Length: 193
Image 1 (tube, rainbow, N blue to C red):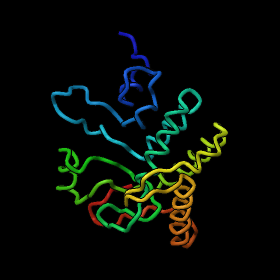
Image 2 (image 1 turned 45 degrees about the vertical axis):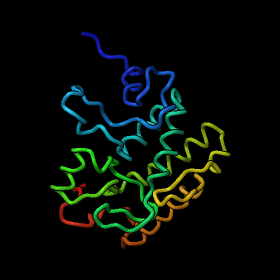
Image 3 (image 1 turned 90 degrees about the vertical axis):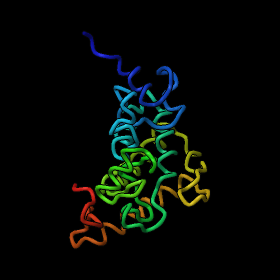
Image 4 (image 1 turned 60 degrees about the horizontal axis):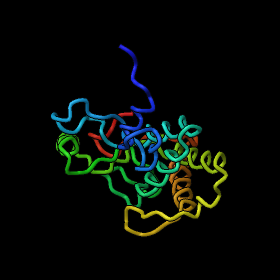
């Protein structure tokens, strides 16, 4: 058989009917469930790094996907310190699931994770890179003034999300003697990167 059309497959991951809607319904999920009768698929959620890489790679063809990904992800930036989420102020999430979905419940039961889970060191610099690339390519400088609602229910601008993320990067790098950006799992059953 022939390979599927990537635009049609991307539209499915973006939860829209066709390629013309890509980005209009938010960012893409990582993968779709082949058999819906089996319930939610293991990767049928948002992954910070993967969504940002997809937005970067597809930005020329689907700039609205990049924009939608940045706005949605800004709303998930860490706002508090929570060890079981590995949430830290300014940190971008690793994996975002509804805490009530069956896979989230299983992961929480087996590993102690809470949602969204922030155990990623690469998603935050990718958020900064993707945001800067979007403003550069689109020329939409006003995007930095666009508002979003943070996890704490307060309104912020995209420029503030950028500052929050950069502040996390600086704090994390300052915690390493060589100034490296280092993954430090917060608890025993955290993600092993």
